Amino acid sequence: MEADEYDRLADAADHHWWYAATRQLLADLVRPRLPAVRHDSLYLDAAGGVGGTARWLTTLGTTVLADIEPTALASVGPGVIPELADIGALPHPDATFDAVICVTALYHQLVPDPGAVVTEFARVTRPGGVVCLMEPGVRRMFRAHDRATHGARRFSRSDLRRLAENAGLQVQRATGAYSFLIPPAAISAVLERGKSTSDVSRNQSGLGGVLGRIASVERRLLARINLPVGLSVITIARRPMSCDNSVS
Image 1 (cartoon, rainbow, N blue to C red):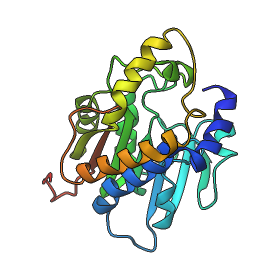
Image 2: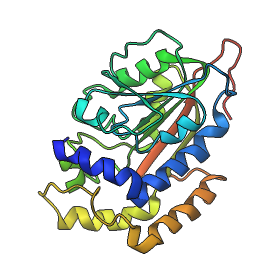
Image 3: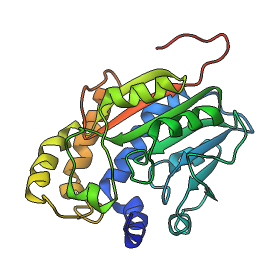
């Protein structure tokens, strides 16, 4: 990722409609599936950058943000423990965290083997704990933003499900999100072909709040059903207990 992108990310985490909507989306989907909060509950924001999407975890317990980029860690907000680490080789013992949240990291050029990374997430998650993966969706929708952020791949819903299952996790939810953004993103992909332009500093208000309100409507829909596609895709999976073989 370009060095100045982290400055844009730090600003966007507080002001961009997508970050606010995504924090609420992940809290709505993940929080009901988390193990009961204890005095020693511990959460991992894996490759969390400046911490813009998983900071809601800090309201539940101690949250570690692991990232390989020192520039990102320098911009991490309050309530998070920054840690310089490669998510493919985390420096933690087995079964350390109650939950691992990874948002838009597996798509990156620096991740040659997403499956190995998800297996590492499963290793450091406690039995009964949760792994949440959220990545860019629609495989063929490679855009100027992907080039600016050094993206290497996008995922289908089944791609993320398969990564979780191959890591020995039990999938609880697999859904698309931000489905309403697919048409404008497709148009942008055509208009910006060959360009490298980040979305982060553009349209922070979301058309004066319109996109945020549509996202709110979609979240209410996601409370009841899984969406087959989305500009993002999300999988929530659980590390099995020795006697837990159920998938809801």
